[in-house]
Length: 117
Picture 1 (tube, one colour):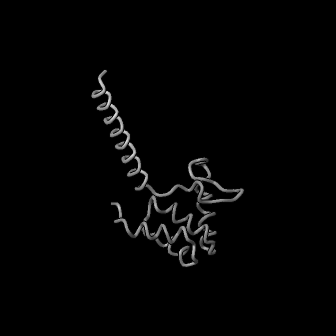
Picture 2 (cartoon, rainbow, N blue to C red):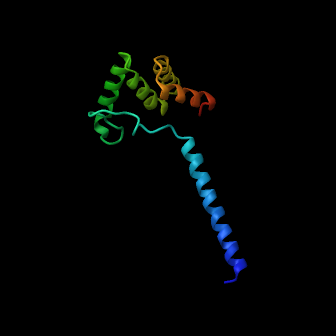
Picture 3 (cartoon, rainbow, N blue to C red):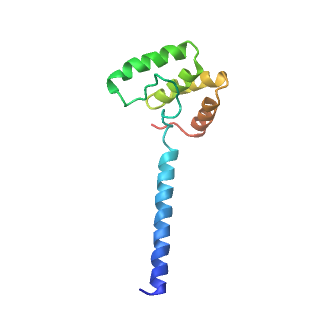
């Protein structure tokens, strides 16, 4: 293999890596943040780990959010973002009104992006 051919192959490989990196970055930036790592506590349930309990957990988060728990309000925003953007914005706004930094940041991100149809 000549030096020219080897250099050409190396450049093509680097361009391929850059393309793959760009693709995954775009995909990652358009997804809502995961609940994992956002919520802490000993009795935390992450959606999908135990599907039979999702409805009960959702009701528990909703009750806590209605009581004014800022962590629960932010979590309800994360949960509702997948299905009802207006409801998610309402929960993020409630958490942001109490000064929750993650809710303020997520509100800014959502308001900067147009709604998906």
